Structures are given as structure tokens and as C-alpha cells.
Length: 188
Length: 188
Image (spheres, one colour):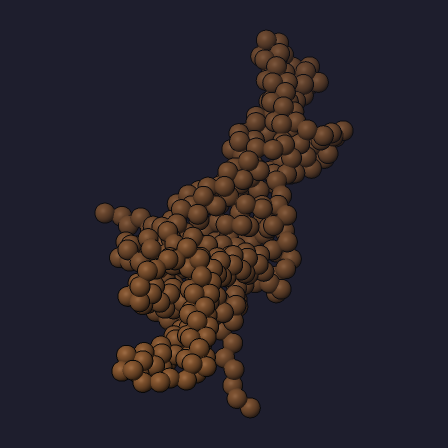
């Protein structure tokens, strides 16, 4: 998702480099093509607008006064987007799998809990501040990892999970590893 | 309650037999101790009252006109006692075991379901008339059996369980066989 702002950022830098060259020429009392400089200014302003708009879409309350602040905000956004992307990937993983159990009522209950967990993950992955920290490995190994968490050995990871993702935790508490099946797509 | 029943039933038979013996003596113009015969009659009436009261407490609508009819009611009452004893034995079996799971929340949840199942079993033994039919084997093998029930193969047993014992069904639907541990007492 960082690819969303990198072109605008690069475009701003490039436009500013051209402008800086023009400033150097002017400072050296050399002539410049006014129309070209105006074009560079317009390009830089457009890139700055795009960046501001992007930052506002992720962190509506963010403000900054200089380039260092902006870079700090963009780093923070990078982390937010990474965390959101991880949550979205886990939501997709949860949707990809299915519950198998001897009793239909248990399948239905666990499927409801799974759906609530997916909603919770998407809600945290949506616009807003930094989502809560999700402990554990990447999405494709996450469920197996979470089903192996035990009390009291894994109290810290469990506390993080419970406090940030109550529905996901409730789903995992109720899920036995043998009840979770993920369809594997085999190429024809 | 079941142990009181045969005792009262025998008591009626004995006192009626003694009273009949006295009548046979009278029929043979032999002398009898009137006070003793009166006592036998009172004993027989007392046993009748006890039996009627016991039968009414178990099967309030039961009526009979003959010894055969009464024996049929006795058989029904005995079936009710047996069914109640089976439910109480299963309640005791549920109390004897314990739930083990990697997550404390799940243990707590299952213990609550277990408590509700025990309350339900005990409540079913206190209602007048026959309790609902509990499918499956005797209590010590019941939980293992119930955890092996699958849909759709065991639909009939599951329907009987669900209709008669909703809480017990919920406990079993949520229980995985390896979560249930029964402590075995080893003689010193």
C-alpha cells in the first residue's frame, strides 16, 4: 500500500529538484524558462496535494510543519498500512477455511464466531488510528499457531490477543485444530 | 425412592398374606387372636395407603381396578424409578469428571454447560411421571458414546437427546472427547 504514496513523494522530490536547479540558475543570474518553472511549480504543488490527501485519508488528524515531520508521519502510515494489511490477510484466511465437526450445531456456532472474528478484523483494518497489535506469525500459519497457545505458558500473547481482538480470541478459544480445514487449490 | 418401593410392595403382600391366613383359620372354625388380625388389617391398609401415595407421586393419573392392573402400574412406576436412577447416575458421572483444555476460558465455559446439564438431569428426575427417554448406554460409557454421535448418521439419537435434554445436548455438542477426564480412584 506504500506504493500509493511513493509516486507522489518521488514526483514531489523530482519537481523540487528541477525547481532547485532553476533557483540555482537564477542565483547565478542565468535565464530560466518562466513557463517551464511555472510548470515545475504546478507539478510540485500537485504532488504535495496528492501527498496531503493521502495522509489525510489514513490519518485525518495528522499535522506537520516540515519535511522531517512529514517523513515521520509517512513512516507511521507505513506501519499502520502494514498492520491493516496483516489483519485483512487474516480475515481472508479465516474466510477461506471452513469448520468440520460431527455436530451441525457446533459447525453453525463456530461459523458464527468465525464471521464475527472476520468482521472484527475488517473493522480494525478500516480507516482510523493504528490497529491493535496482533501477536503471532503471518496469516497462513496464524490459526495453527493460535490454536497451540496454552495458559499459563502463553499468557502474554493471549492477553494481547484478548485485549485487542475479543471476537477473534473467542473463535480461537472454541476452535480445536482438527476442526479447521482450508481448501487447497491444485492447478489443473 | 426406588428402594422404598419394593419394600412397601412386599409389606402389602406380607400383611395381606397374614390377614388371609387368619381368614382361612376362621373359615376352618379355628380360633384367631382378633387384636392380632385387626393389626394385620391395619398393616395391610397402611401398606395400601403408602403404595397409593407412592404411585400417585410418580404417576398422578394412574388408576387400576385389579391386582393385574396394580401390578402393571407397579411395573410402570419401577420403569420411572429406573429411568430416574439412570439420569441421577449420569449427573453423578458428569460431576465426577473434569474438563481439560489449553484455554481457561473454554474450561470455564464447558464447566458452566456441564453444571446446567447436571441441573437439567436432576430436574427431570423430580417431575411427576416418566422423564424423557435418554438414548445411549449406561452412565460410565455415556459421555464417550455421546461424543461419538455424528450428523447425519445418528440423527435419531441426537433428536431424542436434543428434545429431552437440551442442556445436556449442548454440553456434549461442545465437548471434544479428549477434553473430558475422569479421575480413577486407585486403592492404597
